[in-house]
Image (cartoon, rainbow, N blue to C red; front, side, top):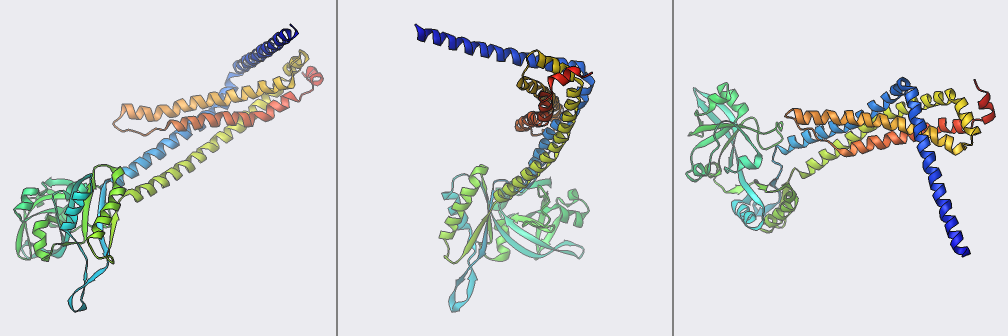
Length: 424
């Protein structure tokens, strides 16, 4: 019986303590709201810094993500799923100890296509340099690249005028070329004027059937220069008199397959040549990863810079709360005289500081979210948005309220109730 009475007493004490805590917290919230209503203008001005700081964090992250996406999309314009195989060195010793380069061949390309799944396009590349003639004694130095019709897909080339050569052109060994836009402008004054014209390479006439350009300007760092002509590989190989290749291009179905495929392609080609020969696979994966890392670092740095706005706002909150404590000194004394503890006084002013900073953070987040969403829904531009930035902004707002509200709340709790009752 005694044990049952003790259990009931313990349960009642817990319920009473919980009720007391709940009532105290509700009272604190109610007092905080009354305090805000009494000094609306002052608190609105104090919140303004938090609004600007929270909105800045979201907008800075949005700008960083937009810049990152633009940079990655631009680089991907070269061919996001491209694998470019290159002969990097190593020679074969022939008769009379004469060394010859161990170039790749079309048989290597066919072997790769048969053994590596996921390849959607491929192209050999043969390079030939010579002068071209457009008549009337006008000649220009140019580079003729022998490629397959799928080269356009692999390299993501843009056709400005005319057409690209197709499988029928390659099969019939048609003497056709597709000219790079800068060369067409130099020779004919415009890209459109070049289509249908005839040029001569080593006395052989070729018809210009199209004008192309790269998706992005590579500033001469790719195999395509400002004096490039593309022609079917089957035609270009007669100029070199060989079927050896220095480069082979492959395009994978999905970007996740690029790196595994590059490794497998290298193994296949290496197994078909001398062990001393070196072949390298180039992809955009490493470049894209590096660019993504740089963009992320810049976004973090800019976000930290925007975060300093919240620190400045925190100082404003602290000053406002210190003034609030000073103005409510007599109220604090009355509450202590009626039994309020130092903990309750401290919690009251700390709650007010957190509410003040959090309210500013919520309004700022709403403003920060509204900008990218409005642009996305009302314009053709799609801005990337990260909800994590909202969480960071709100968390920082609460943290600022706690840090900068600690000093005013401690000062309020430390006031002497006797002296505060005398305060006028």
